[in-house]
Image (cartoon, rainbow, N blue to C red; front, side, top):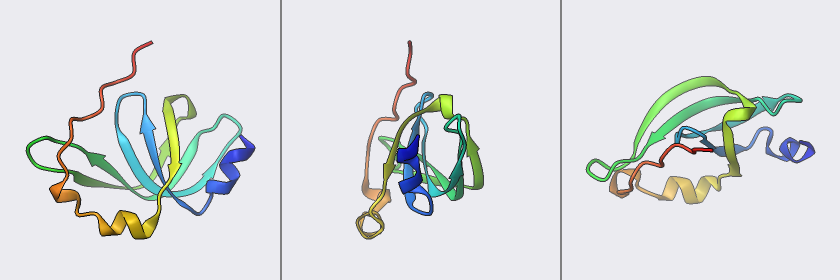
Length: 95
């Protein structure tokens, strides 16, 4: 969990067990790896319409739902035109 400290105040991408991709600024976390994101958006991938971003604002994600946390490079992320990206949505993780 000490590794999460380096992500505080950084823009991150969370991939959740249900396949959702959430982007936001990590505002904090707790001992159970629950994560608070500010200025967050859900990215919904589609083969027909490109990537749709749904604003979520301040968002709490339970730690047991998080599959992956990665830091985003702001410059690279802003340089990508999400409307031109076509991708299948991620399937839910099944145990």
